[in-house]
Length: 189
Image (cartoon, rainbow, N blue to C red; front, side):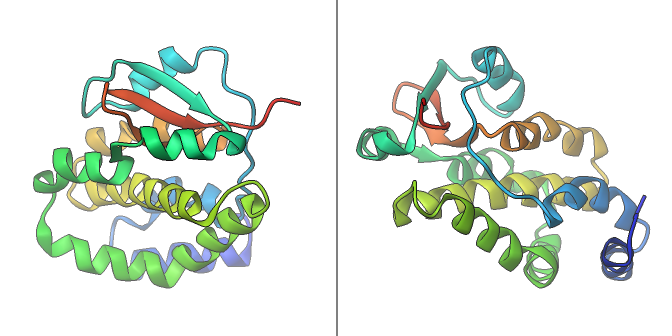
């Protein structure tokens, strides 16, 4: 699985923190260690994808925004992805896992991932939107890893389409008052 010393070290780190779970955690986290976030045009089937991505609640549809439409996006945002995940899934995981997982992610990944997200999008996004994006990405990973640690592998696997949406350059920010998923995409050329 690990192809170089850095990834071998990360695997060792996760295995030492959560014995027997290191490889499963790295399956999720490995792509994010060197990820360079980049907004891309909306996927042609984004509406269809969103219904797979947001498995913990029903959505009405999808609304896409670009960095140029920041004010409209900010005005539309009712619930962040983070708030929605926490409201729906918090009780599904053992509370004792939270602090240990958060500490491990902070040590291993958060700083470099946040820096990568912010530096990649610095010119196109206002600071408050970068914070919303960071919260959404952070909890997408946090809950996925949390379900692995809780030995709920089927639940953890449900997060893969959400993570794939990030890799596709379509960044889910949250929900509007009408239950639409708000997704940040690249400015049209």
